Image (cartoon, rainbow, N blue to C red; front, side, top):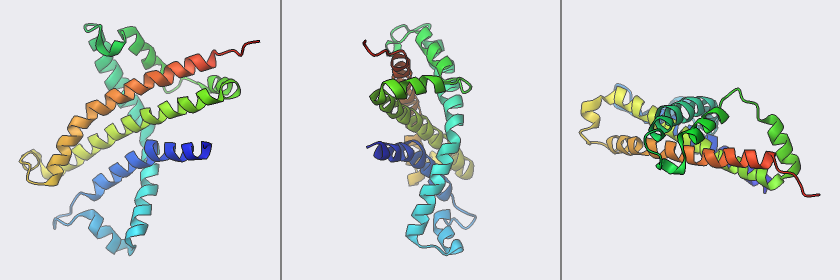
Length: 212
């Protein structure tokens, strides 16, 4: 079961969002309007299955690399500091959390904060809680990594085709960009939502003491 969960974590948190970024690049076209994903198999002389494996492996690497960047800039800085914390000071009912709760999560997600001792206690005392923490972290990572993939997709194709062509909705890429624009705030909202579960489980499990 642990091995299955680790595979699921690697796929949804790293490989899937990273593959979306790789595909975003492959959907760009050259000066002859030929898509890169059609050119590369001919250049490298690989078949379709080898191409899929390469995309999956490269996607995992890209997803792994963008995780700290997406967590800091999108989740911690954009979603929490610039949106939720400021908004909650004026809208007290937002998400059931007050501004101080978002500020606590903001500090908890700080990259240099060391949670290793907490995780050691959690693994020793509450094995099931540790799996739940990893499960919430998978959702947090997948959400902000997919948001990063959407931003990269939009930036690449807007810079390539231009605003006038894209928003004329003459191609499937135009619809995909519209979907990506809608998806970004939803994904960041989900990332914040699961980050609260992640933080609260860590705090409760690390302070848990077995009854004597």
